[in-house]
Structure formats: structure tokens, C-alpha cells
Length: 143
Image (cartoon, rainbow, N blue to C red; front, top):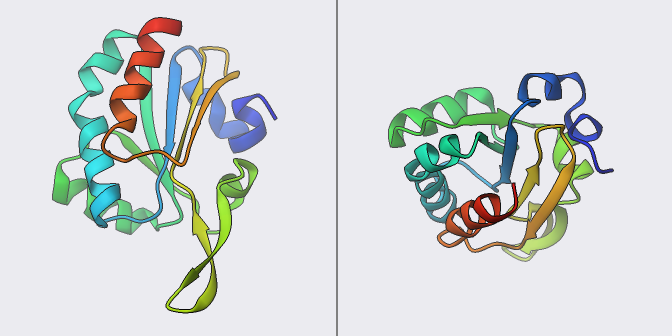
């Protein structure tokens, strides 16, 4: 898959015409996810100058996203994927262990799509603090 429509279907239409940063994070209100969300939020004006939208996605509900965004004054859109349909297509759902039990975890990753919706860059297993700046540098230099 190389096109935004392959991942999110007809919802992709609203993002075409601008570059899109789609950052995948495991869970609202956790330390790393909060830090990453705040960092992307801090850089939103820089992304906007580069004709780039920033959108987060996790398996959390829309209600959870709303509370998370309100609590930390996050301005970027947060998509809910409770069935992990999009996350699975992005290949970020990975087996792991939690408290000795087998679980499915979400691998923190970021995907960049150009204005036509073509996937142009993937960042996998990212550092939540450094990733937003790395993504901004990539967009600045390549799109």
C-alpha cells in the first residue's frame, strides 16, 4: 500500500491537497503519548507554513481523544481506530507482553503522505520526544 486511500478509505479525500503527517501513538494520557502530542502541537504553525496537516491516531475512543485534547490543549486532529483497522494496515499492531500476558501493542510510528496522498516516508519505533522535530525536518527538506 502506498496511498492514503489504501489506509483510510474515503476519509482520505479531506486531506488531499496538503501534505499529511499521520502519527500513530499507543494510548491517550500516557507519558510518551502526551509528550509526543504536545511536541507536535508546539510545531503546528511550522507544519502549517509547509502546507502540512498533522493528525494523530490511536485505538482510543473519540471521547477519550476529546478529553485528552482538552486536557493538554492539543489542536491537531486525533482519529479513533478502536478496531485497529487502520493501525493493522499500517503494520503497527505488534504482539507483546504486559504483566506476563500476551497482548497486542501499538508501535509508535509516523507516516508522511504528499499532497496527492502518496506515502513518501515512514518513521518506525520512534522516540516520542524527538520524532516531531525529525518529521518537521523531513517535511522541510523533502516536500
